[in-house]
Image (cartoon, rainbow, N blue to C red; front, side, top):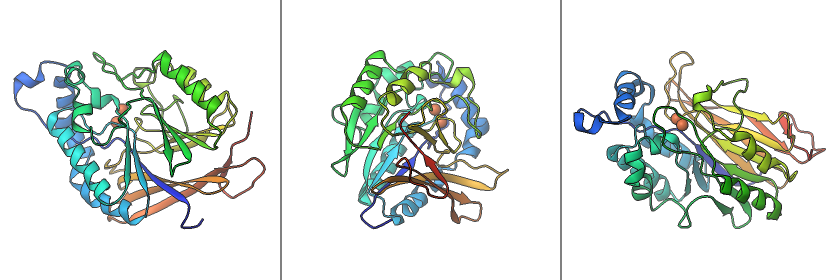
Length: 308
Ligand SMILES: [Fe+2]
Ligand SMILES: [Fe+2]
């Protein structure tokens, strides 16, 4: 790899949290979410580390940061304010920001009605809205696909049929490969590192999966939501690879880890994916390096993506 390679960082599921004590602010689904934050998430997501991790990301020399949603826990003003300041810190380090909402960013119907995500993060979301195609470095395409919606109780996602049609059209018309596509929800319900309950899945994932893959072009689909790292080739569509990155600030006492992010590096023929993990000693390690590459190219640790 050379210095000229395009390098982006993928972070997801930051889950900035704020505990609410005012009962009038708890007259909706937030009652449950707030309880979850007070009992569990405030220990699980170490938000005091966020600014330290900005320095780590900045030192990699990435040109952009992709954030696939769940910046907040219950879509509160206070949480969005923290998310805004965090994104601003990344931008002030010279990195471009591409951001999508997750289900926690549209946690209540009230937060959607008040357009909190759009209001607080207006300086970072594409002016044309979602879905949209970003041209990375002026040439490599990145599709930003909206999948999050508010629910009464579940954590299900949904892709609008018009968005699926748009994705299929983009896949036909784009002539650069590989194509990156980003969304909050993964398309695979299970991999070797996670199992997603039906109440937490993207409802029409298979339609989006087909729309992305049927052109035969090589696609790296990037998501979050499951809070676990996974990088795998699609069993049904060998031209499609799936990356999900673990939660950015998640403290896992069993594994002795305190957060993670992925680094995605393009060069001529390949896309490399690196997983960066913070160990309890506050040392960052690069646990693995994998790549997907042109058919016929053989590299150690390579997921070979080929036309179906
Ligand atoms: Fe999440
Ligand atoms: Fe989520």
